[in-house]
Image 1 (tube, one colour):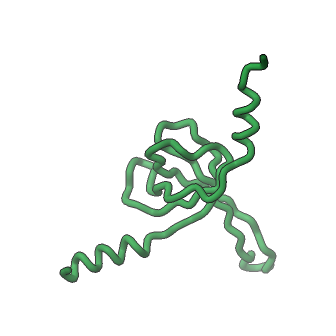
Image 2: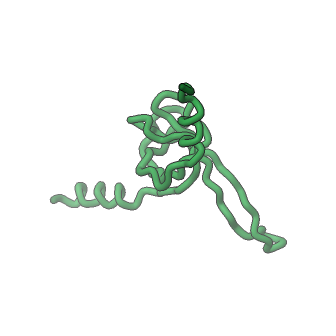
Image 3: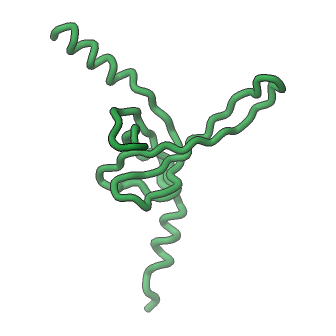
Length: 106
């Protein structure tokens, strides 16, 4: 391998990853993931929760509302989409309840 191939491979391995909860699946092949960050306030030193939304590409539309997912940074895919769905960490129990609620009663 040449040095350019090695550096390109190293960049892919160092891409930023975040874990968050899916808050919207209303778009095609796109999910909105809310990532909660906890950090100390600069002046008061109290732990503050901040939530930020990220738009991620979901090729198979496999993620559902409420799932915990891991997303990885990628090249810009659209105006807002710069993340890719890496894996579904934990399925939501919400979707299982919704699936049973829509079944017809015999």
